[in-house]
Amino acid sequence: MAKKKAAAKKAPAKKKAAKKKAAKKTTKKKTRRGKAEAASRGLTPGELLGDAPAEVSALAEQVQSDGGAVIASFPDPLGGKWQLLVGLPVDQVEPAPFQRDLSDTHVKKLEGVIDGLDRFLDPVIVVRSPSGSYWTPNGHHRLSALKRLGARTITCLLIPEFELAYRILALNTEKAPGLKERALEVIRLARALNDLAPAQESDYAVPFDEANLLTIGCCYDEAPRFSGSVYQPILKRCDDFLDQPLSEALEVRAERAKRLLEVDALVNQHIDALKARGIQSSYLRNFVVAQINPIPKGSRGKLDFDETIASFKDNAEAFDPAAVDPSAVG
Image (cartoon, rainbow, N blue to C red):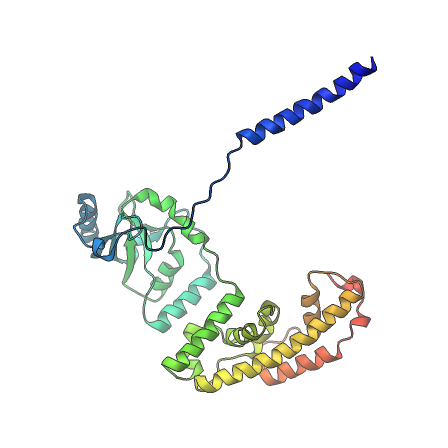
C-alpha cells in the first residue's frame, strides 16, 4: 500500500518533467541577424539615376495637379523602392489622424531653431491619402512650426505606398539623446566652431540650444560619471550665453565646470557619509543637492553664476550628514 502511495506521488512529478522536456524540444532558438559586410547592401550611387516606374510617374503628375512641385524622383539607396522629393503647399499637408498629440513646447523650440537658421533642413515624410490630402505620420511638430512661421511651402519625402503611413510611426521610437549625449555634443560643437568660424558664444545660441549644456559638457569631459541632471535646474537659473569670443568663452566654461565639479565632490563625500550611517536610497544625491541648493524657493529670474556657485559650495561645506534624520530621506 505504501509503495502505491509513493508511486502515485511520483506520477505528477514525472508528467511535469516530461512536459518541461517536450517544451524545450519544441522551443525554437532565436537566430540573430549577422552583421552585414561593409558596403554590401543596397544600390550604388549610379543606380539611383534612371526612369521612375509608371505608377511613380503618375503620382508625380498628381502632385503637380495638386499645386505641388516634384523636385526629384529616385529609388531608396537601401531597399531600391521609389520615392519622390516634393515641395507642397503647407495647407495641403496635415498630421495623420493617429499622430501623437502636439507638444506646444516642442513646436516653439523647433520654431525658434528653424527661424534662427532660416532654413528647413529636415523634410517630413508624407503619403497621399485617398481624399487627395497629404498625411505626415512623423512630422506633426515640424509642420506646425513652419505654419507658425508663415511658410508657404514644405519639402517632403513622398512615399507612394499609402499603407506605409501605418508602419512609419516606428521611426518615432528613436531614443532621444540623454543629457550627457546632448552636453558632450554641444561642447564639442563649440570647440569645432572655435577652429572653423570663431565668433561670440552668444552668436551660436541656436545650435547650442542651452547655455548650461556647455558647462555640463565640460563636466562630463572631466568626469564621465558626473550626474548633470541633478544640477541642470540650478544652472538654468544662472548660466547664460556669454558675449565673449568662443576662445575666451571656452576658458570660462572650463573654469565653471571645475567649480561645479568641486561642489559635486563634496556632494559625493556627503553621500558616502550617509551610506556609512546605514542610510540607503536611490535619491541620496537629489536629497543632498536639494539641501544645499543656493536658490531660495519661490525666487524667479536669472541669477549671477559666480555668486550662485559660491553659495552652493559654502552650503556644501556647511552640510552635516550626521545631523540628517534618516526618515527625511526618500
